[in-house]
Image (cartoon, rainbow, N blue to C red):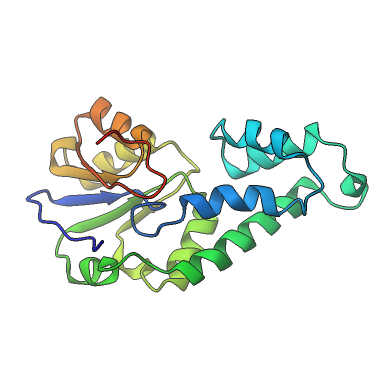
Length: 194
């Protein structure tokens, strides 16, 4: 499926995972892989289903498991291992069809509003060679809702001048709560109802 659309909105705000790259499944899978089979799958599943950020997820797994390597490796070691594995997998997956062309040919203000922490998001966007396409890259260092308020202030625009393209119910909920038009993308891991 190729990502293509038209809008009369001045600002196009994209979620990242599942919208520009089909990465939601990879991100979940890497929470299992970083432990090399030494943590119970049940524990990992129960924590991953809470949809916490990467640091909170890994911290909770780390604190609840009995790992002999706890003495050797810190939580930050696992966060970095997770982030490196996700980044490597994303480079292998690449952008969805039509994304780079759409971004480079757009005459709109383009923004990313993602739950992925800025440090990792910026690095991945640079490696995917699309960092330059965005006026603002707003990661999970702040909530998606707060990121929209930042945009409204920075751009001196109203929410009805923006469209949010997302693949999760939480994206739609943020858009709806602010009066931002929402365009659904039905990614592999979407939880949006059709």
